[in-house]
Image (tube, rainbow, N blue to C red):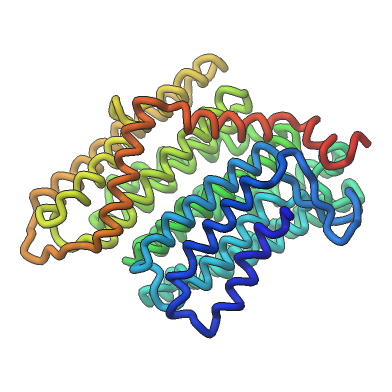
Length: 450
């Protein structure tokens, strides 16, 4: 049954190819069916594909971490699908393929299978990146992504050489220490592109700033969430924290450099693209502290960032002129901006406070300093853009579709709700954390106590 989370969107994509112009209206129902199915699947189960048990066959693992990550990613796809204006030109078919591959990345317990799903994800992402005729950005993304995919495949090969297995649980138990550095380095390079770690995130501004609301809205939220989950699963659950100190350094550098770059941008979408890179760096540096509280804080912030970024990217790419003729959209944009900065009463304040608390408790004082420095820069450019959009030239202002206004407004109100009552997001973050850190339970679930 778990495999249906991959099969339903994949089969639907092929069925609706002849009706690609109408597929954008079918997309929400298919994603909703996936979410309903997810809630009817038992937790802590393993599906053995083809009847071959682990570690010899391909497995799909549904534990608390994969369940809640699937829930978040599928809800993001549902929100995007409810804005059919941004999925024109048959891109709904590509979104279905992308949904199938991201679900596969989250569920798989096999390192080579994760490579296959990663390549499918990348192929779909390249097509989405080329929308609005952004061929240069898509080509740049293709080149960097292809190189990263090669490194990830090398990491999978070294994993097999070091254990004689491709199964995550088996690799966790039996990896030879002499192979660990090579495996970790190759996999890190492979994941750094989609996880938006500098310098391998250089493709992001050219792709996200193409003018298409779909491209950054889905790649910067759903795909990024999936890739950070996969990185966490590999380096925390499978490799038991090995190499996290290196990821921590790259995360900090990414946070600081990307925020400085965002401050210097003269185009809003490019500024938001660098902001997206910076937030990914922040999350990865927090996760790399590898404590229960830090991992929970990291995923809490990732949830807040994904919510804010959907609002910011969709409105920034849709609104023409100022907010004076789109006041509701402008209010939503401002709320998302304030949350990203970390103002009190907004969701971002809660997660940044939790990051500071978890860092201090672990004896780390560098991350809080970097966070406070980057927040000052972030506040400067986001407030500047808010002032410009509210009081700039409104002669060319056009009203945006009502459904986009409604969805972004609901999300912005939810940001305030989480700022006041954070338990919903905290519960999701805690469940993901429990699944990722309890590697013994993961191994027992997959291998049956072997």
